[in-house]
Length: 115
Image (tube, rainbow, N blue to C red):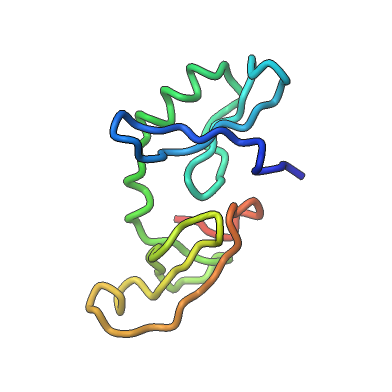
């Protein structure tokens, strides 16, 4: 299993983290690009190419609706940190209606979240 503590954050010019590169070789000659959730978003590639890919992708996908374990219920990401991913019912949260939090461990290596 991959060790997220070895991942290197990739940041935009404004300092916002847009993803991570997971080293596949000790010299970082080949890395695996991962989004903020920890999902793989490209093939193994050189560090600079992975960094460029992540900066270009940005973090817009975090604002989209997500589904947990293939369920139909649309969820919105409310919080995202190494402490975990907190999701809420997307429609109720948009209407500012209190809703129960759903917690998923970070990183989501099992791919429990999908769009």
